[in-house]
Image 1 (cartoon, rainbow, N blue to C red):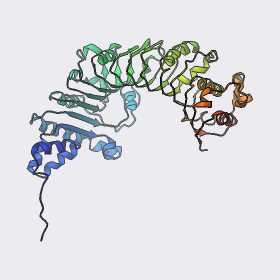
Image 2 (image 1 turned 60 degrees about the vertical axis):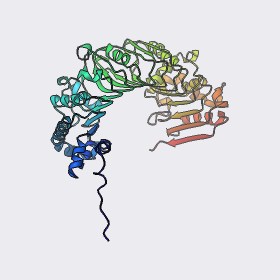
Image 3 (image 1 turned 45 degrees about the vertical axis):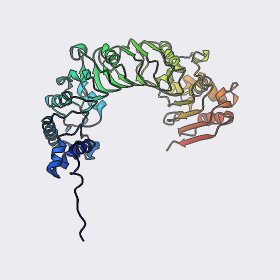
Image 4 (image 1 turned 90 degrees about the horizontal axis):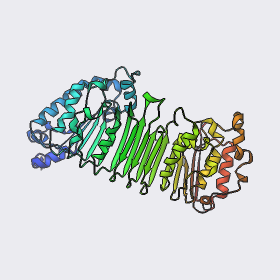
Length: 469
């Protein structure tokens, strides 16, 4: 007896078939039209569109991607044209195309530097505008995810309806276009938006981000990676915000500092900040903060290090309630170069359990690194975990005698940590785990390791990874 072959898929109701196809990438869902007429009809009723032509989606080399770029454009045009005839409501629209190298592309497009690849192809502004406008004409759109870049971003503008969709709950935009404020986005109304991710944008107005956040009353997750050409202030005020990632660069104003960073987020739980120091921080109501990652790209321009320290100290005090803290870049370096930490001006991190610190880039501060670490440990009485992802010193900088001008500040290196009079309280009662990567085995590192091993009374795990030669 022959087995009975039954086509159970195409016998399903249209609503269920459309729901199944909506879970697939659109290119795969479109391929099912070849199975039967019923599948072809069901495809017209899908509620999500996922168009992905990034290199990661098909794992091909760039020349092959360039050759099939025109085919992808034709495919998108055909799919959107066919779906538009069904008048089906759309809940999710995702479009990804081109290389996921937004920083390189933005530098190439906005700042007139050389393109990473002469063969790189970009969508035409008019066609891209039509693609972006398509989901905005449908009811029920809850998620919009766009990742695409233009060779000449000034030729393309975003449809203003993007920021006035009441049904939107997730908005992710990775597009290298400029936003000129009220002239282009006169109305912002996103009452149901919970997640907002802006990447590669160039803001030429101070108030756009402020207006945007203030018109998202239930926003919980905010991530901004942008370049500011004229904007000098950041004002974020939201009682609903739980997670905030802010990465800002100002290439055109390296000789000018930002005026103000004001953050009022009483329910914020995660804070990731990367940017140049402004003249003033005004950060309040961070009592609910659990984790923070701070990376200062550059201190105040044309100002003294003491001025940078006072500005940075206000940021450090705002983080005094955090439980997990990561410090990078100039934030760590300025703490000691200013020469005022010995006066106990650093706040006490009374709830800090986990501390992560990266190696410093400035050789002048290498001589102070061991002193700096000791001072920070004194300010974290409940510290349990201490991590050094890049080790103590950068690329084999091991001997301070190579820099005679800093010998006078390297007192702990001369005497060793063994002669330190005061032991941080966290070492005696709370410190349990230490991780040090890229260890070179220098005398300074050995002294610091001996100090930690000898004084961490309840230490349970100490991991050291050697730096390869």
